[in-house]
Image (cartoon, rainbow, N blue to C red; front, side, top):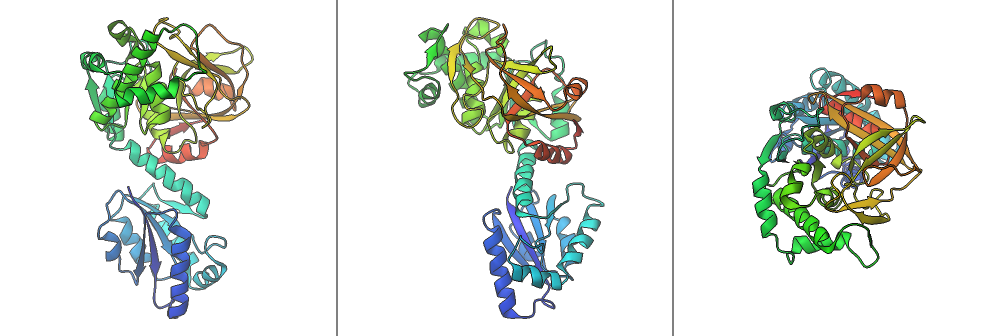
Amino acid sequence: MKTIAAIYIANRYWNDPKDLKYAMEDVETTFIEYVDELVFLFDNDISALIDGANKDDLIVAIPLSGAVQPSIIESEKHFKNIVIMAAYIKGVLSDKTSILSTGYNAAPTVMDSYAVLKRCNKNIKLLLSIEELKNTIKVFRAYNEVRGARLLLIGDTEPWVVSSDRDLSVYENKFDLNIVKISKSYVVEKFNKMNEEDDGFLKIKSYFINDNVKIVEPSTSDINKALRLAAVMVDLLDEYEANGLAVACFSLIEDLDSTACFALSYINSQTKYVASCEGDIESMISMLALKNIATSPLWMANPNIQNDRTINFVHCTSPLDMDKKQNDYILRSHHESGRGVSPEVSLPLGEIVTLFRIGNHGNQCMVQLGRTLENIKENTCRTQVKIDLESFDSYIENSLGCHMVITYGDIKDKVKSLAELLDLEVLV
């Protein structure tokens, strides 16, 4: 998806060549940092916009005068994604361009066009600032990352993950996904062939292993098996040109004498892909949705409810850098099986986090903000952090499943905008 700024101009207003040249340079200087292309369209001729563009591109329509409404309406017929930028508002462009475009009736053009387009296109947005533009571009890119994505399911969803739909066509039809089933036997075959001198193996090893890392239960053999499995999963994502994977990790333990904790930790932090465990398709799609709007790596976690109406979120798959810098960690075994390797990460406290999950057959999503608190370690998954939610009651009543996707930072508004594009009912 390209982002194209389409600037609509009527020569009947911009009849002074010097003023027009100044305004065009002003627009280019202002927007070139945020878009892939700029196209100037005159007197309702949009051929320069249509030529070479793709229907999936995001068009940022910027009226600089009146009498261009027909070309804005016509543009919407050629592109699925279009937003209108009220660039005449003071502070977006220079004062001179703002004054001129306002005098040339850009303001009523914006509202006239927006009122008509929103009748038939729910994705239409009206943007009032550069900050809104930046956020909107991120949201549309996230939307396009989900729509049409290729995802891998290794094995079958674990039987206890009852909230995740087993009918893959539900997700494929809802989000236009291609979900590819990967057999356990193929993973085992690749695992057995994985060379510990392989560049991918060594790259992942350097992420987890250093002279200062504390190792509790795992042996050198345990660590190397976990690294081999992580390298295999990255190779699979590359091989299938996929966007993410869900792995039925428990069903692999007996075959490989290892767990996928290292793999998920690494993939969700250090690659362009996403990965969920226990074969949880809904968590994988939730992670895919957040990947391009999140401000930190993503972590899928279980909720342990506390008696003070907080929740201790826990899992063995946390990235090492949940707040974008490496956190303290030690290497442990996987909690349930006592095998494999899991990073036990000390997550940052006193920070705002966003919690998210898609569920109910891909029709709803839940989003909550929270703040991380110090917790007393429980006898459960290795990485743990207590979270005080903005609404504990809403979290309980609107829960869509066990696993939640957590990222540091407040991206709730972006999530709600993305949910609207994905036709998801938002539960807050």
